Length: 546
Image (cartoon, rainbow, N blue to C red):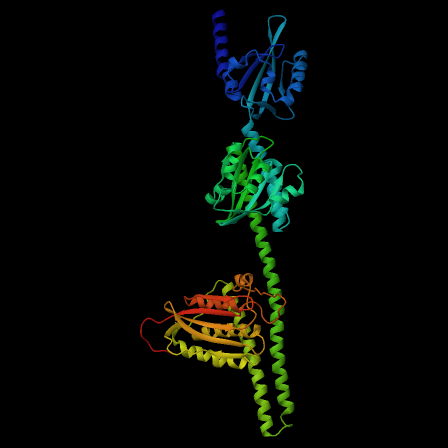
């Protein structure tokens, strides 16, 4: 019987030793007397380092006094065993200082008649706890982002704030694409003076030089840097001002997550641990990646909503301008027609003929304006629908095309002189005659609109690089660099209150010329007039011209 008991004790001792759970035995003074292999693995200490030490070695400092009192109360009570931390998980601390969540039970074991020891069986549940917390946090984030206003700036702010609720001391949001990237939003987990945040928002960076989010944005992959030393900060800075910003943030550990939606890079989220001394892990990175995906979708939804609103506003503007532009020529046509009817019997044959010619000219000009406007609208509708412009390509004489454009548009130049350069010896071109005349109509109409009375608009053409390059030059006020940068954008106008157009003509010009395989550009400066050039390919072989 004694041999069987001895074997059982040996078996139990071995089981305690190799158990995956931590089994820790303490005496009545709460000093460690046994520390098994599971405890060594979980806490990172060896048995030799812990035996004889107080149990507080394994507890966060803020909980030590409370745990000592609760263990003493258990030792003096009647219970033989109970679960510790019934309301929430316990917190342990590893040898390196990292805290973790744990579940534990404590049991009272009697040794002899008057002595007892307490055995604590502890299990590391930090991964399970982190997983549960991460799921709760992401559900919370998803609910907030889905209910947040679709205003783009407010969505950016909410994303940064969400990051500091659980993951980070600081969150920086970077947006843009090389060559420039900007810090557009900043949040801190505690209230920070607005001037500090304002000094960071809008900070412009050169994407080709070092910055915190460079690896994340260039690689479009999550990045984890568990430890950041002070020596690393100058290596991440582009300037003294940038280094000052990094010192303000004082990163000790950081994660970067790209904001990618439908294959397009929007920017990056940077999660930074500073004063909390939190060391980010692979599991933290997984959570941040999920938050980044939610943030990317929320930002894309906000962007689409913003685009939709702008499109609606643009539609309303276009409708009001179209109504205005169509009303004026229609009024002119109606007035000229009424005058022709009422004045038909008031003048002799010669006077009537002169009046008829003048009124018919007005009708023709008004009808031309209406035709041009409706054609522009139809073309833009096709392009917005993803359709290509219809083309009827043929071989044409560049000289004849230029002269036809001049003759057709000459009646429009009532207050401005329209001139034609000497254009003999131009080669044949391949293109759509009607479309190229539409280009001339839009460019000349634009030039006449902005050229002062008494000044001139000139048409011409030349051979350049295997193409015929046509030009329309005016002697108007010229364009600023900012205006030239937006000229060919749809619905863009230098003066939004100008009701003489809807900002479509130059957009259509560019679309037509690019469909010909050519290019269009402008040369201008304030007070220097404006010259538009558009090039069309020359016919390389022989063939009859239309």
